[in-house]
Length: 348
Image (spheres, rainbow, N blue to C red):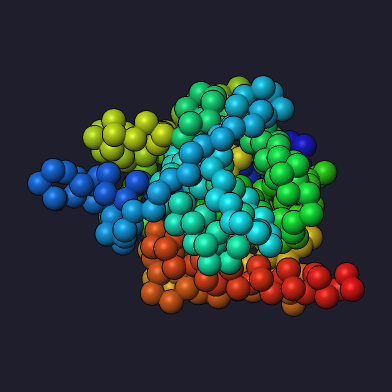
């Protein structure tokens, strides 16, 4: 991983692929509620290591129409904006790899908008949703991080005086942590890590499930590593176990992501990256998360010594890996409200 603060040796990288490849798949399994239900009413989703039931049963929330902005390489990036009449803060919130902004994230956007007067931007990562770019691919990991900068700059044009928070769910949270680790990243008021995918070195994964959602081609990562990152970045390395009818019904989903995209979303030095965080953060995970061990995830909060006092880390009672999208908004909104209030107090 080049041009960033944190690096990993070729040997460590290859080891990451061989023993922790499953870490590249987490956070990539979101669907439109109800889209995977056949006309008979029976779910056609294959057995997976976590539950879609809560999202499937939740009442529909209208999707706001997508807008777009231009990335630094000319690609058009799509985003949805949930806008209250008088916003008090702004949130840039990323989906997991393989999903998109309309695959459950409308609940976060709508709830923060209506309940807390927060304007929420939910982008489609390039190659996902209706953003341009080869499906599930990127020119290199750095370009994905530069896309985050482009989104932040757009928000600051729209709302130049609002406190801005950056975050995401699962591997979208991994993307936010990777971005925060890059030299020259845009400064924000705080970070939001919701059920974060922190990579194999975090050792936060639950034991391997009997029905894994994705298949990882470790040879693609090995070839990339052996080339020093010069070749095989565009090889598709993580294939998701989406049913054909879901992919047909929702072209915004992607069936696989490449080495480049996987690296953009996956922290490779999570302990060091958390310790170096330069702004307060909220770290939350469902108490019933099927993919990660909550206690191990929350332990990362104590690594960020310089910002820990202003940060928050806790479980969302009863929430699972996907249902946390339905339940976390109040905890997130209250923390942001507190952060904004404290910032205003300091400015007086």
